[in-house]
Image (cartoon, rainbow, N blue to C red; front, side, top):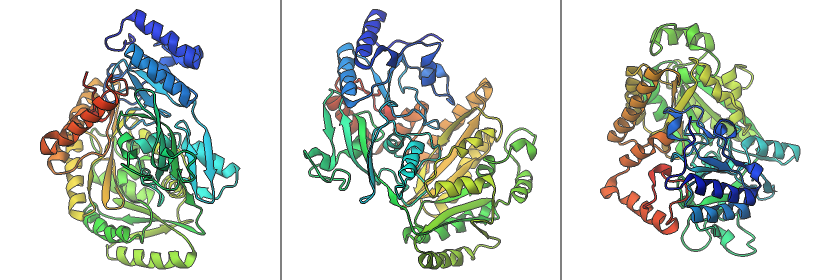
Length: 516
């Protein structure tokens, strides 16, 4: 496949720019071999042709000063940069650039854990630090703090937070638990947000807001700057930990299940993100579809019933955990059990009751132990591609049922299994739906793209917007956030034009394009 060039630049200018970049980072850290090293900067699971999101080159700096120099060269040569932390966000585009021909700015070498403060329970990290790396650092140094990790443990802490990802412990809202950023702006200048804007600040990772406008959110899911340092709050190791699983027998129980969970979550009786996981999602990490159904299309209810019986799963499977002194957890559990007893046929499981993959995977995540188990979902039907559809809704039984029926009908109609879970946060549901597909089958890829686009529009028409999406669908999702004559995007465009007038940073990220 031919290597694309950045838009509006000649081959001679491009080659000259690569030499200049090599002078900044060392030539061994500039990659432009389309048949070799550059292949690692593609979306391995892409729902569209790889040709739509291919880099022209990649460059890997080792310091904030090198990032500044790269940004200044990009302005000089009219290059477009696509920053990544670790490039492991494979449900939403991986390391590939949003715009074809952009240069990937790979921050993986900037992987230093700059500080961990056990007393105040925070860490200061560079963007290349992974969840696994931070977890191992805490263990090796006997630091009694827990991380909150995304499901794929190889991902970057900073990158996931910048994309507004979520986790599994009480610290699962990663943006809420972020405190202080260092950001390289599009002109090469550096700022620090919050208390970090004050020289010799003693509180950069302690108080989020500082003085004046609060800017941190402006850099999440955007292309207005490059985060080179981030503070994250860590969870003190609790005196007790009690994971639990509740199986709910029927799909029709979803309404009562969500109505039961809402007061438990809002009142913090369940302190972490509570998950209501469909049987196929739960089975997919430990079983294969062909063992229960060899036909074409979605798995029928009869096959699911047999699979659930074999694996000890309900139609819905609720996961949560309690943290703290045992007497406190006992009281919390009494409230949870009493509420769920109202649903006929529920079963309760605790540590030691199960030893299956699903239990180990969920139990580890809810205590901040990173792993890679979720990728086992790819074995469900032998898929080699996946993308997540992720709409938000209120925490009500009515909305959960409406979303479930809408998404299941559309995915099933296009021949795909419904592989979904409801994640209940502070006041909202993240409905995470895995779309699994075979990239070597053109007809299936075509169905997948049409299906995904219909999901976006149908959900938006019902009042449900996606909170993040794959590179290929960013413009469409943007178009659904169109209130007041696209007022939000007019502001974003004005910010982009002012802060990045040459349009060098991640063009098209979240649908924000430079106004050249």
